Image (cartoon, rainbow, N blue to C red):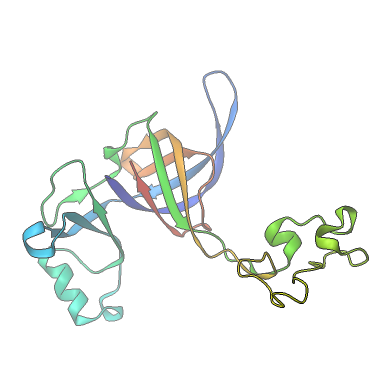
Length: 205
């Protein structure tokens, strides 16, 4: 699928033609440079490698600098491959936000906000004392019973328990493009996308 690498700027809201207030996310999408063209003959599959966001050369390895030099560009912070790209591109080509049109639907992938170690109420939506989740009766946010009887005398894998929450790859599908601001490389998408402000996201058509 065709796509671009972008950076989440933040959320806002706009009014549509009917006066309805629509929550939306502003994304700085591209411009991205084609840093490598994968071919079946050389790599065994077809794909385009895109680079986004300039990186200081002193923070890059010589191997990476040589790789980007072939494409005639500076080092990039974020590099992503896209398979089955809709249009044919060459090494060093620049792809910008103009590839999107208003009204179409896109998928946005990002890393969700890390929330650290959380309990079962926040992590899994347990009800606490009011609903006596998992048999517990006198401790507000405790998980309650988690194990079985004398057989199998263990806790099954996948049991919903406390643990690290967030910081995972999340893909949100079918978000409508409300506006494309080509001169500022901005994409306004209906709804929310995963990640904190200034985090990288991948937009698929």
